[in-house]
Amino acid sequence: MSVGLSIPMSDTSITAINANSIIARLEEAGTILLSLPHSGPSTRLRMSRHDVVHSAIEAYGWQSPDTRLRPAVPDSAQISRMDEAMGWIAIIPADKYVLKRIVGARCLVGPLTGRHLYPWRRLASLLGADHKAIQRWHGQGIDLIVSGLRRNGSAAC
Image 1: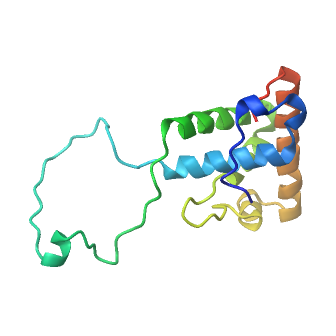
Image 2 (image 1 turned 90 degrees about the horizontal axis):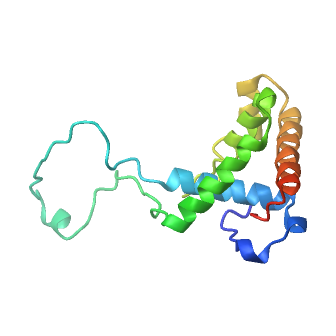
C-alpha cells in the first residue's frame, strides 16, 4: 500500500493511468480526507471559555495520556488532489452503486495507522457477500475509473 504516492500531473501520460496508480491516489485521498480537522468554522453556536492551568505539567505543554493523536492538517495542494481523486468515483455509472460504495469505502485509510477502515471481510459482512466477490467488484470499479479516465484523455493520475 503506497499511501504517500505523489506523482506530479505534468509527468504522467494517458498510458500511465493504470489500476495500481488509481488505487494509490484514491487511498492517498482517503487518508487526506480522514486527516482533515473535525472542528472549525460552523453554523453552531460558539462559546468562549478560559481554561485555568491546574498543574505545572500542563503549563509546560504536557498533556494527559488520554488525549488523542491527530495527523497533520493537509495543505491546500493535498486537498486539491483529494478532491480530484474523489471525483473519479463519480465516473462509475449510477446503476452500479454497489461498486461505488465498495471503491469509496475501500479508499478510506487511517492516517495514523495506515490501515484500511474497511477490510475486505468487513465490507463483505456489511454487504452480505463473499470477501472474494468484494475484491472482484472493487477491481471492476477501478477498471471503470481507469477506462473512463483514458476515454476522457485525462492524464491526471
